[in-house]
Length: 171
Image (cartoon, rainbow, N blue to C red; front, side, top):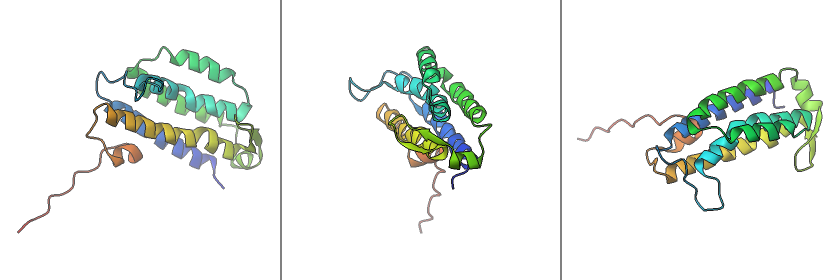
């Protein structure tokens, strides 16, 4: 059984990684987009600046109103405001889940945006954590493609640069 504390721990980790990756995007690369039809880096950050809260609100209420309001507000965010937006979302998700218990995550039935019926716990994994992990990878790839050649696996998965390897003693 996946607990509320486990979900929040994983959400905080993903938030940390997102903030770290956004800080690695080279100056002036906010307009980078792999193809004309894809989001720019700034558009991706704007989406991520509300999606945690929006998806959690949808999972707990089944309503889109929060999504629409926060999506409209996100259009005004500049890249410099991303870290604060992620911090606000983490707190908002904690508030949205404050009344929920491990038992309600296991028993409460919700409907995902694709119409699938599941428990609230499963819904939070499907609608919040899984997409967040995918968008984290997208942000990592955007940062790399736009010139952040110094970042690697540790930046993407741990939210910090790898420790430099010790030079081997050669005889």
